[in-house]
Length: 522
Ligand code: AMP
Ligand code: MG
Image (cartoon, rainbow, N blue to C red):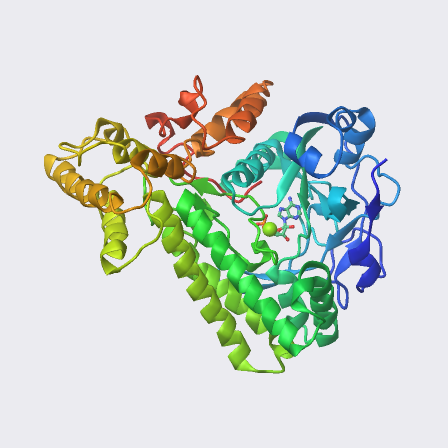
């Protein structure tokens, strides 16, 4: 039987009340709350890698006993479920207390090698933080979260994981486009897994209420549990902790930029203190390389969370965290500024390193190299060009024995429409300069191609692919969810026979809801 602990709630202050009524919870980092049972749970999918990570057994996970736990209908001994209390800045404005309105942590599982992972059910029913909402999640958004958590992990991007996807057998009412057309949809629960689900917003809420004692307890728990290498809690340690979070956040966002992932809701309540991608909502993948694109319809007007804005928003969010930690810095602004600088420095280095690697270069050596990368971006935005296909295609060009004499067919596939001869000529000029630059690398072209294929994915969870799997699942066929999970386990491999999953967005998906635009309704 798995062994569960409750270190977080055993060592930090909690809510003395244990009922679900919506309320403001002061002086507490969490509220104990039981999941609300569902009528007919069914395991739709699970991640074999997460099963292994946790030291569990695939057959056992599919047993009725485990499925009950994954649905919130039963608990293993040692599980003491709770919802976390946090606040956050939403779309640039302080939103006050938010908290886990539909997520419930079941407990911490002691996994092999002494690692501890929290198991959290998303969509497990109301908590004191649900406000007027139902505490549930729909199958559509649960499929998206389940698949993307695992796809991101296999791309090498830090992320919370997904152990399982359970259909509840119950209906949930959602007004998908907030246009007065509520509909019943199937409900689902994802069991998410991470060392911790703490967010910037947990820290912000304490400080917003001038509760420095609580802030300190939270920071001490976080540092002691997850940042032991920084030393015992002290002013210097808090500063080092802030620097490290800044660094991890910068690294995370550089990674998103490199694979074309747009989170869609980078509110500070959706920023992990461990630097993980967290809270998959109206996220999306760039098809054509458009820095102005955001998948989130709620943000369609101001596009705060568009692809090209993610790095700046990351910095803004880190500043919110640093401001929240200020009482622990004893008001020392220099410590805040040091963290912000750390973010900027790390982001620039990481982004340069990632795009250099995407182009087969071991580093950007000089101003000319930086210009080469910028020239690539500038050319890509001129005509609708698929980001994933373009970068993947470059490894086929790098192995040519001479600079390309004409625009390569493999890269033409990346265009969404007709392009002018002038655009092709400009592209060819860039390719020639790039190809020549690759000859200065130490490695042979075949080795460069191999390295490029290891960082330029062939398969990403394109929005239309997820949408097709969702539509099939709504019609009673889960097989596309399984196939997509399978394909996304090896995003850098060619996977003969599965080329269809690497295809650029088809025309029908260009402006279809779920493919190009997603609401927060989930
Ligand atoms: P999100 O936009 O998903 O990050 O959620 C923002 C806040 O709304 C969080 O506090 C969530 O827990 C809460 N929330 C979102 N959907 C629901 C729901 N269906 N029931 C209860 N709370 C919700
Ligand atoms: Mg959230």
